[in-house]
Image (cartoon, rainbow, N blue to C red; front, side, top):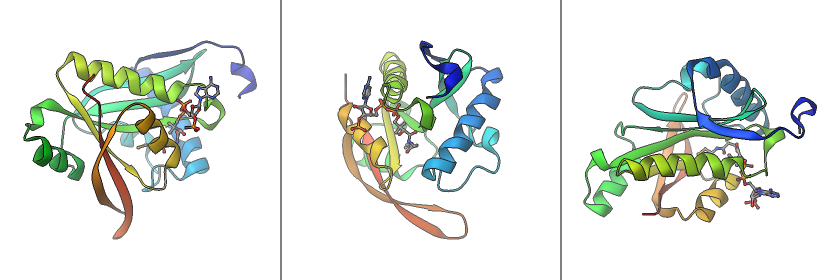
Length: 176
Ligand SMILES: CC(C)(COP(=O)(O)OP(=O)(O)OC[C@H]1O[C@@H](n2cnc3c(N)ncnc32)[C@H](O)[C@@H]1OP(=O)(O)O)[C@@H](O)C(=O)NCCC(=O)NCCS
């Protein structure tokens, strides 16, 4: 744990514009530790600001951003197509989960779970199911999603960079 943050209570709260530099710094540390995201973090603030954001959250430990999660409107993702085929539901009932990470020094404190819980609560309040894909290599995230009752809906190939490809697993959130 970071020495400046020992003993601090961590808040999960909606992200503001002012949180972007701190969230970007945490993301760079996560990439160095875990290779997430696979496409790299050359422009972390831009990567944290994709089109269609519904809501993003941060984990704020005494003013230091140590975690992040986001849900967005569907943009043709394979996982969403898969879920719509299986459920016969429509895309306006779906939110895409993405950009989940916790800084290495703040892991195993339940922050990942609390960030996802915030996304699930928002989705439930808005009549949305959360659909996401996770790289098959990101085992801690897969354990977390399964512990939180997410169901596997299939597998996909995530393509990035100059034609690189990596296996992904697709999940949908539980109904309650
Ligand atoms: C996946 C990730 C977000 C999890 O974050 P986290 O804050 O460590 O998650 P949690 O603390 O909720 O759970 C992690 C573990 O700590 C345990 N834990 C939670 N609270 C705990 C506590 N108070 N004391 C001890 N252990 C605890 C959980 O049971 C879990 O155990 P497991 O590793 O055996 O499954 C983090 O590992 C990460 O950022 N990974 C890299 C990025 C990534 O893969 N993102 C996925 C995008 S799809």
